[in-house]
Length: 270
Image (cartoon, rainbow, N blue to C red; front, top):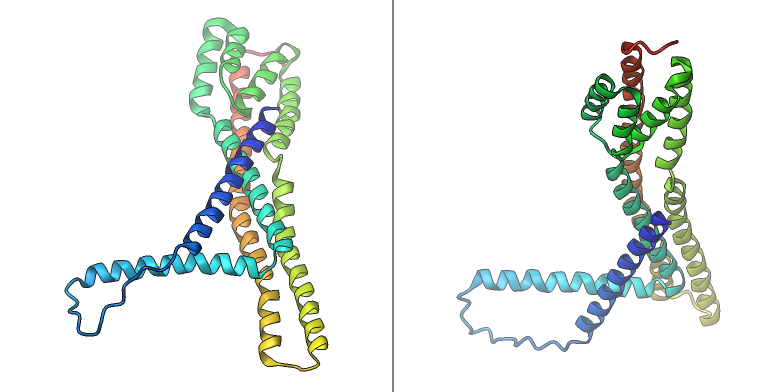
């Protein structure tokens, strides 16, 4: 329930940010150009200020161009591609937050468990695991909870519960992978439909006008460009998440071996 609430919250923030950007772009587009063009006889005595103004103007033009291209691509496919981007980023951000919270200082945790075993036995070590968040502590707790049944049972418990934790870490990655594949596919579909509309326009006009053909093809290819951009953005997040999960899994495996060594050191029966 907490994960679902966090996902909805992140999605809402991203959609609110996208709406704010569109509104701001509308205001910029509707603002009249009040720039005063000076005559050639005006002496330019502030080149740095002029360069800054030109850079700002280019930035505004860039935002306007993005808005224009987005509208030219058609709201049907461009809107869906934008929704795919928002949902993919929401899932990626939720996973990043979850994985960062799942990270644990394993060296410190192992020292605490070993000290607790010396002072209070298995129950004290289990209490340390209860007070520590993350999948490593959960795996340790399950292993310690079955410690009375022998070291072989502990090893099987650690492996089994480790697989459960791996599944929880990888949760949501399949949806991100789906969005990565879906974004360019939607773009290609928009391109094909745009090409069909362009040929329909040629058929109606009865003339193969270069401007008519070029304009239709340009609009058709815009959806593909945006789809590929969305796929590349989500792919970067996906690769980061995969590397983060691999690192956590390796940590879980290494520390599980250390836990078994600690239990054997304290004469746990085989």
